Length: 334
View (cartoon, rainbow, N blue to C red):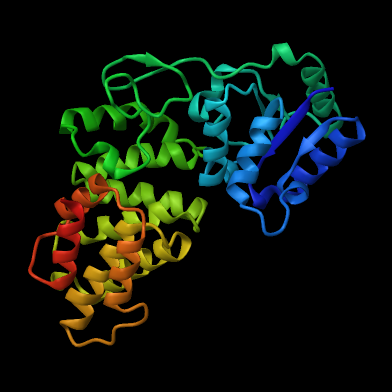
């Protein structure tokens, strides 16, 4: 019997454990992070080694896993290493997530566990029947490419997940992304990737209400994702300098930017945005500046992941003004 890597969301631990125990009872070698990451080891390298050393990548598909950056990274790494993908449809969610709609999945929603698990065993016994997603088509230029690629041959991202990916696009091109992914984002089982693929182009097009609605939906589905919190804080500024916000608007923007930084301390744009809000609204209006202070935020930003495209989008969506935080942001962006 073949060996498998289990990719799942911690929120679906009960189902994941049931699947792992059942596989092991049937003599399937299973890589499962709860059992196979040794204390003190680099967890990311352990996961990458687990993917490369097993034969089949099993993805437990739920709204939780489709909203998880970790599951997305594991899936993309499996594709990069040409691993066969076996999707386990464990709860109602978008079956077309990142090209998975083109390959057969095992449906645990419509079938009882015993019946569906039997299909899993038969698929693993016949490993040659397990495939990887088919090619995907770029919405902008229609170029085709591997489903494991983030961008097409012309440099367009297939599905936007960050504002920096959109920095050189025209409004008409941004509108193509919205039109392409809106049908997926509109359904109840939409995942984080579908919601961001619509909300971020809307934000880049200065459609702040539409972007905020989609980002809020993404946060409601999974509150601890950093990037949607950052983008929602940015949308709340509506291209105004922080000094001009109403008090409640500033509090909301500060909360979302703080959440983003708490969930991902290396997200430099969120740290810069939080510094701008604290410095230009709270400090200048004489309100108390809570921790982390402005300088702490700027130090976190300088020590975080600096993506100049991301920072240039931030500059484009905040009215320029003279301040130490703005100077630091401009310096990092160019």
